[in-house]
Image (cartoon, rainbow, N blue to C red; front, top):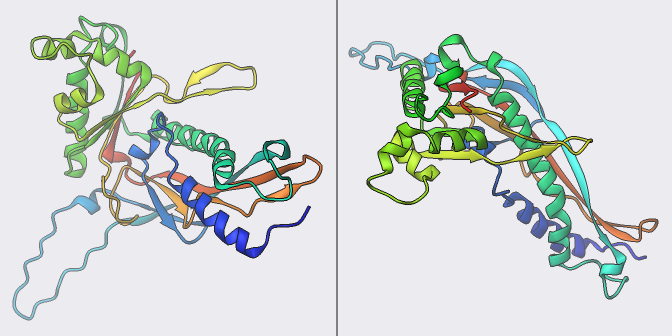
Length: 310
């Protein structure tokens, strides 16, 4: 079986790399808390942000006086990008002519499944960070119990809890949170709770949506984590568990120097599709997909965790 020529590689790989870089799984929302920012090296220091990043500095100076210098962010704990890679397969039987490489359509289909899996792995890593209560101080988390749970429709107070979370973040960083991420079960509990339902029962007969909740809670976005994962035994679990996260995250990410709840440090140019190759033993074309990245918390006081709302 002839190998691909350099011209074939140049034509196919850039197109498929563009395809995977634009890939978005509709049920994955971790980027709402951890937007991707490119880095040029696979390891370094997390640029963490404390209250200094949100401080109102005195900038007035007298004639001839010194100019005050400020620095946004400070180096925190080290990070190391994780290199994740999977391969998609196009069996020779799918091709009319085994002497030619798969076309763009088959190549795109071959890389979609690896990207789904890589995307789920990233979603899980982001959720693990965001829902770990040990990452938050006592002023930025609450575990609901008994009648305080949102699933207690008559007594739970989701709007009140969200408002308290917003205020806790705002008074910590001087910025109003703009994102609320609800797990699937938290979203169900919130939209069926009396405190929420009673705000819409006279104005809308539609089912309560995340857009309606965003307007009610005065935040830019409400996202719902629908992703599930399966273990080796075939048991499915919700990736985002039973949680709600309120956070400030820049919606137009300009770089890792901008204060944020979190980022996903991503190797520049990733994810990418490596040159496909033919495996004689499998009688298939193989498409390697690589994604080198690491989600990190860069400003934990810019977030608030609400546990067990359902």
